[in-house]
Structures are given as structure tokens and as C-alpha cells.
Image (cartoon, rainbow, N blue to C red; front, side):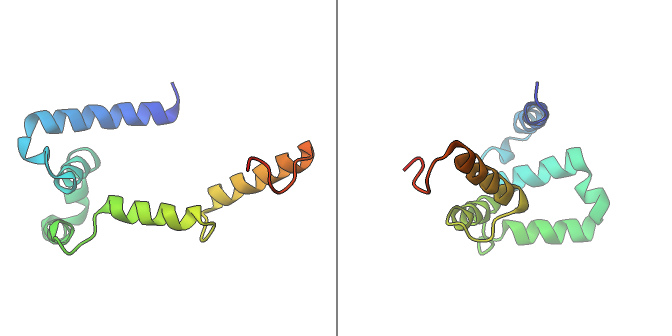
Length: 110
């Protein structure tokens, strides 16, 4: 089993338990995230009650973009080739090298 599979399995177990125990989390991913980070990662203990409650308030505000929206926009920007992370840049460079070694032109795959 890969590390990613183990991570997803562990997260899945935690999310399952939270959804089973706290029905109010079933319709709100932000609340679910806070509950998960608090229960399994010690967020509230690390931040203290005041900072935790303020952060939760900000994240639950309708004016605050959701994490998934931010992630999707980042993904779209990077798909255009801008602001690539180191891992993505390295994979693209490796792919170009493979195309060169195999003798494929710039239009490979398209």
C-alpha cells in the first residue's frame, strides 16, 4: 500500500467517525475541516481558544473563499504553465527530456 493510500485511509477513517458522530458536519466542509484538524491534529490546542475561534469565524464567513476554490484556481493557473511548483516543473522537464531521447518533436501527443 502506498503512502498516499495509507494517508487517504487514515483521513477516511477520521472523516467517517466525525460524520457519524456530528451530523452538523455533513453539509459544511469548512466545519468538517476544522473538526478534523482539531480532533486529529490538535489545532485548537496549538492556537489557543481565542485564535482558533477567530480563524474559524473568518473561514466560515460567506465572504471568505473556500479552500477548494483557491486550490482549483491555483491548478488552472498552473495548467497554463505559469507559477509552477518545483515538483511540477521537474516533471515537465523530465517529460521533455524523454521526448528528446525518444526523438519526438515539440508536437508530441498533439
